[in-house]
Amino acid sequence: MKLISYKQNGNIKFGALEEGKIYDLNAIDSQIADNMLEFLQGGKEQLQLAGAVIRNESPTMPVKDVELISPVPNPSSVRDAYAFRQHVATARQNRGLEMIPEFDEIPIFYFTNHHAVFGEGDFPVRQRHTEKLDFELECAAVIGKSGRNISTEEADDHTAGFMIMNDFSARVLQMQEMKLNLGPAKGKDFGSSFGPWLVTKDELEPFRQSSAEGDRYDLRMKAFVNDIQVSEDTLANMTWTFAQIIERVSYGVDIFPGDVIGSGTCGTGCFLELNGSKITDNQWLNPGDTVSLEIEGLGTLINKIILSD
Image (cartoon, rainbow, N blue to C red; front, side, top):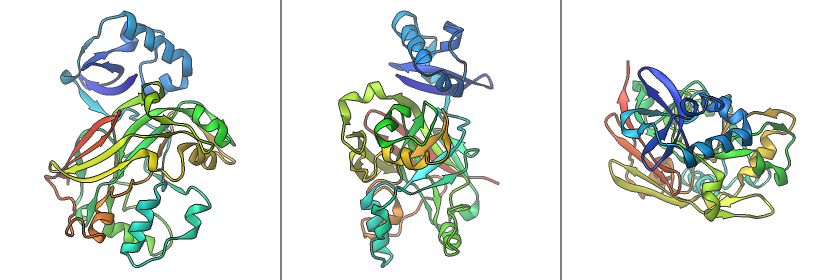
């Protein structure tokens, strides 16, 4: 099932998408929540009700008539991990650094700004953000079941589904602040983009690879800047699985439906890595550029960079 949040007549609404048509789930069945967070909190019962609507009812409207926003427009938190070895090793090598051994000890993550969440469309930045502005091609898991101290073996059951994530980065700001051994903060907190929809795990079953470390999904990942492909990898190359990341995240703390956890940048998934590897020539994003991120089974997330006041 593809779950969406969208704007219609100035209101934020929630629904499911099938073959280019939207099902306004709450309007069809009032037992279904009218927003993504409450839907996720309702767990399997809400999913079953939504599935029945799609099987038995007619869609409400074409998707072209609305504005899609982040599928989870008000996440309770956004964490971003660092799960792809190729990205970490190459980015460090490009800066003259050895691979850090602690990468193999724990799945690391940071908190980013859960109030600066965007969907497809225009992505506003201020002037200083354009100093080495970068995209980051990632997948985000959305938590659908609360828990605490969750083991790797149980963790996949806490994931409702997945969506594309673009973790935009202002590299000059980021590198300056991280010299102080904190952050990233201002290099990241101006916004991340998610979408175009949240895909539930059942749709991705053909791509799932089970292992003792948790499920992996062999989904091809690509990034295009101004229609020129610059990145390619597969989600199956995550060194740390989402299950392992969730175990780390939930150690001693609660996680909640609507929490978002990013995979971290895939191999070749940003200009920081590409420029240092001489794949691109000191290329960064500028106002007017369009970034398109594709993940097999999850769709395409398109953003245009615009300069804001």
